[in-house]
Image (cartoon, rainbow, N blue to C red):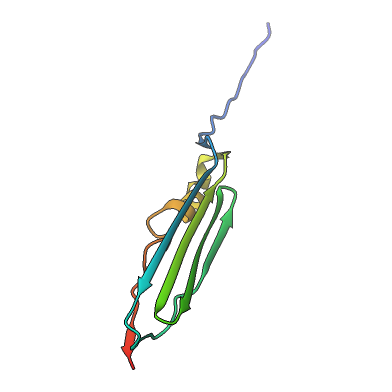
Length: 104
């Protein structure tokens, strides 16, 4: 008599079916007498799901904010969900931060 024992592990997977690129450009025009107290820091995040960056630049009274995200087509274990949230979750920093200006 033969006994066959099969042990299977089911691993849920996260699937991104296609590459997706998202770009958001924001231009703030301020009165010439207003000076930004401190410019927010640029952000760069890269992981197995893609990458995200936020850039801040200022020329005179113009503040330019550029958010860019690229999600790559991939198939990953479900336990990597936190890494995906680093790129697309609510706490990614892809909004406009609080900006403090002083008058000259």
